[in-house]
Length: 188
Image (cartoon, rainbow, N blue to C red; front, side):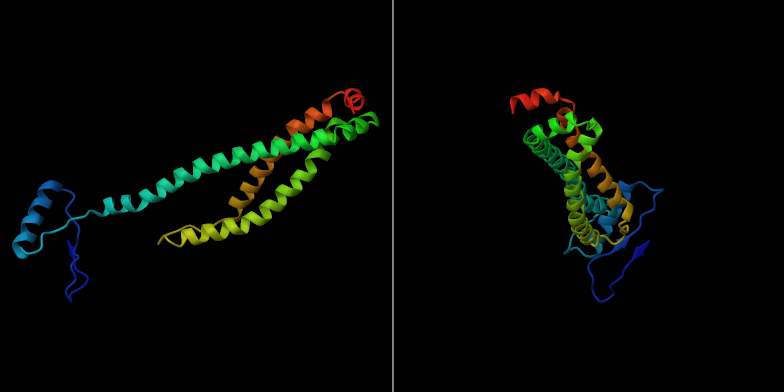
């Protein structure tokens, strides 16, 4: 089948080849015919599936790099959050000891130490989500057929971020809350 779209002198023909015939033989016959019809211009044959593969190869590389750097960014941010919570717990060790002596529970102290960080994580997600939506929306506009961005993707990302941050902060908060208050007050 031949689909010739520009009758005023276009230089591109789109052909659909019979899938039941040998592809190599058909391409050789097509080359011979095109050289016979127009010997001054040798044919340059491209296959649609190869062009699609080439088009999406960059997207696959972008995905790989995004996965790598995203994982690295999450790891580095967890290390930073871990260090920040260790510093805050060390700064508040006397307060934690006094609260424990006055009857505060370990979950209550963990909740107290984690609440500030969770507010900051919530604020960060409120700032990041519109920027991420805009960037993803612009990126998807490069494709003829693209999906719509769903709200639940951002909700799931926010929940995952909150869980990772809560886990990171809770490790040190629990360690500080479970420590002996007498030791912390004696050294202070």
